[in-house]
Length: 372
Length: 157
Image (cartoon, rainbow over all chains, first blue to last red; front, side, top):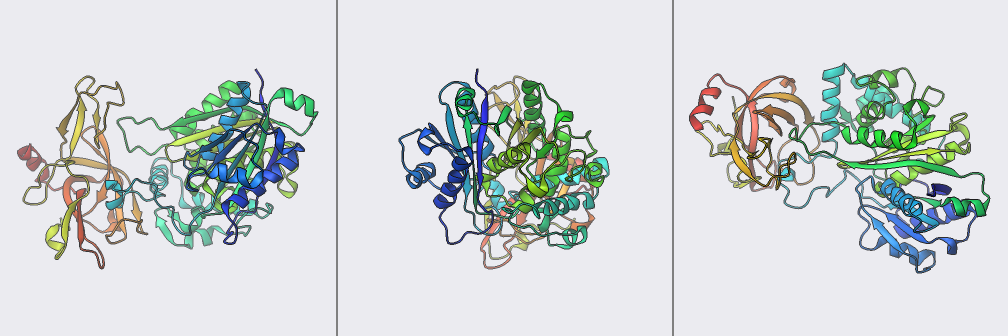
C-alpha cells in the first residue's frame, strides 16, 4: 500500500484581509503549494476544501478561481478540526489507490469578536448562557489547578512562549512579544482565561499537496515528508457527560503512535491546538509529552520552547499565528513540513526528523504524525 | 439563600430554557432534576438523549435526582455570550449529583465565594434580562445547600 507524502505547502499571511475574498486567499495558498511541489496544476486529481462557515460549495468556488479541471471536489466541515480531517481524508484516498495527487486547502474569513453560532438555534444552553466558547477550557483549567496545583502563570506562559515563537513566523497575525504580567492583566473572559489566552479570529488559508509513493518516485523529489499516521476521534459521550478532559486527544495520539510504531519520545517538534492557553498544557499530557499533571511544570521549565527538549507551536500556535478555523489544521501540517525539511529559518528546530500535529474541533480531535 | 426567583424579574415574560428537565418548584424554589435511567443497564443521563450511550438501549425512563450535590469545578463567565440576556459575571459549574454530572448555574452567594467541593442543592432560577429585554429565562441551578434541603428532597419525591 502506498504511503501519503506531502510534497508542497503554502500558507497566506494570517490576519485581517478585509479587501480580499476567501476564494482569493484559498487560491493563493493552493498556488503557493503547487509551486512549492513543482508540479503542474493539471496533475491534481482530487481537491479537498476544509472550512467551517464559508458557505455552500466553497471548494467549487475556489476551483473556479484556479482553473476548473473537472476533478472531484470535497467540502469538509469538522469545526476547527476540518483542516487536518481533510488531510487525513486525502491520505486515505492516496493509500487506497483512489488517486495519486490530491490538494487540500483550509481557509476561513471570520467575524471580529467571539466565535458565534456554534450551537444550533434554540439550544437551551444558549439562553442559559452555558454555551460560552472557552467554558470547556476554563473548567478544564480550574480542574487542573485544583487537582495538580497548576497556576494561572503556567497558562499565561503558553501565550508568552507562542507569541515569542510567532516573532519568527512571517505569516503570523500577532508577531509581538507579551509578558506574563500583560497576559494576566488583560481582560478576564472566563476564569482563568484572559483575553490574551484566547486565540484571535483570523482570515487566512493554508494548503498542502499530497501524493502517492509512485508519483513521488516519478517526481524524484527529495524534500517530501511522509504521513506516518493520522487518527480522528470524537468524544465518548459517557455518563459523566460534562467531564472536562482531552480524552479524545489521548485516544487519537495512541492510535497514531501504534500505527506509526513511534512514541512521544520520538518527536522532535509538535504543533498543538492552543485555541485557549489551557488546551496546550492539557495537550502536553494527553499526547504523552509529559506525565499527567506535569503540564504546568513542562512549560515552566522551558521544555516546549524552541531550543527546549520538545518544542511546541514553533509557528506561534493559534494564539499568536492566528486561528482561521478551517485553515488551522492544514497550517499546522505546513509548519511541521517546513520544520522537517529544515526550512524554518530562525524558528528552525535543529535536526527535526519527526513531528506531530494535534488539531481539535468541538468534540473532535485529529492527530497527524509526520517524518522527514 | 437569596435566589433570583421570578418575583425579581418584574415586567418580564417567563420562558423555560429546557422544559421537562426538572420537577415543579416548591415554595422556596426547590426542584429535582429529571434525568434518564437506562432500564437495561442502569446508567443515568442528564440531559436526556435518544439512546443509552453505554448499551444503545432505547429503554430510557425518567428518574428524578436527589437535590443534594457537590461542586466538582466551576468557572466565572465575565463576558456574556451571544443569546444570553442576563447579567455578568455569573458562575457555571459541574455538579456531581446522584450519579450524574450536571453543568449548571451556581447561584445564591457572591461570585468570588464559590469553591470546589461546596455542598449545593437544586433550585429553579430566573435569568432576568439586564436591559431592554422582556423575557426571563427559567432554568435549573444549584445554590448553597440548606439544612432543610435533604428533607425537602424526600418530601417532593
